[in-house]
Length: 112
Length: 110
Image (cartoon, rainbow over all chains, first blue to last red; front, side):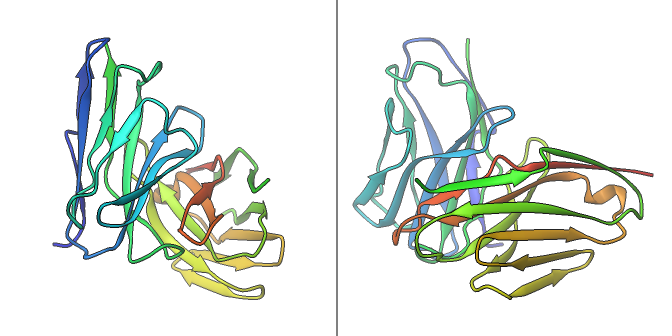
């Protein structure tokens, strides 16, 4: 089945630790995205990538880092510099920019 | 500044009671408008893409329309399974950066 797989579904992190969220797609899409969703708020863009080895900052990139070494993978690292990391993180992909994006099922990160 | 505003924030409907959700946008050079459905704890599910004013798309009880400044999502004779948060989004640059609205939470009661 084609789709976008995010793992893990739930993640707990201690303060001061870096954690990496996985996102893999087998749709052969060029573009990939990371969004953050907080209760009662819309999705906010963290990073996006149109091609391998290239990515751009979104609206809330501070405290996050990404890599795009393979077309099908776009991992997100939440660093200790992110002051309020508890949120629902969503990965998406699209054939190219400006076409509809398809989302994974999300990772819920909680800082304990 | 590019903005996407959805109204109402929440909508409570009786089963069979049709209604419409609004998505208004301010963006230079519309490159498309997308509608999504999101269930609690899940990722958004793609519903429709609209590219030009006057365009309409339908899927089961949902119909999306587009004008030059806003889009409507019409829910006809809704059922409880239509309960969800409905999101709209527009690209704000040529790279596909999407600006999402805050969503409309729809609850349909039997």
